[in-house]
Image (cartoon, rainbow, N blue to C red):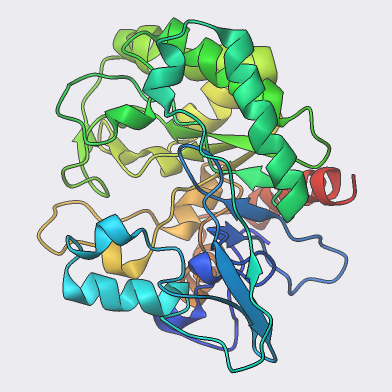
Length: 344
């Protein structure tokens, strides 16, 4: 229950559901469907509205996207061949329906990107954009939108600044709260604010180490998250890939339990960003996050989830890196959120 939905009968990369989705085609991930009486949460990515497979079909093996299974065409020329191969493997390949098969569509509205919304300085407008996304989440059966992102514009060189709101944590927090309030007007729908925290560069994005003073963290890099939590109480928070002063944010109990939950009063679930084996860089001095340490820090979901992550969590319990009590606490939070959103 603490590991994202995966196929327990397969190993390695092929155990990851990823963007293929077993319930909504093109969904970025979901929680487990293998535990009785445990509703499954469906999650969709997209910085400017939902990103789902535009066309899909169903056969005896499940759902399949038509074409590149949701990989944006603009990415194709820039992705290394090995990564493109594994992306297709995880996302369902490049399949086509058999003759006579019904092809269904999921067209989603593109709302303005984060920086453009923030330039309006209009939180009511932000809420209206969130309302659009929430309506489509209800329509397509998505429970958690993996957005908005509210990292700080620390440098103009950050490759994802367009997705973020501002260099000002007040503007960032208020805009994210507006979007969240708009989405969460809709029963069974929630946002996932990200990437918590101090994630401000894309170079070595999975294992770079942000060195930040406590004052800077509180006044700049976590402040927007606190504002958003207090004004809108998003249903989920996603941690970032990077380390913070030598510790992965996803494995940082002080960041998750002490600041987010205790100081800000956060009541939802905390998940990792999408940690998969192929993202590890042997040249890096730092490893990727591990499921056992994420759980020990109070992280509720390790995403997207694979058999190796499940095995790591079990081994972590056996070796004393995480207590069974903490795992139960994490699983209980996921269960409560799943029932809240699915059994609306």
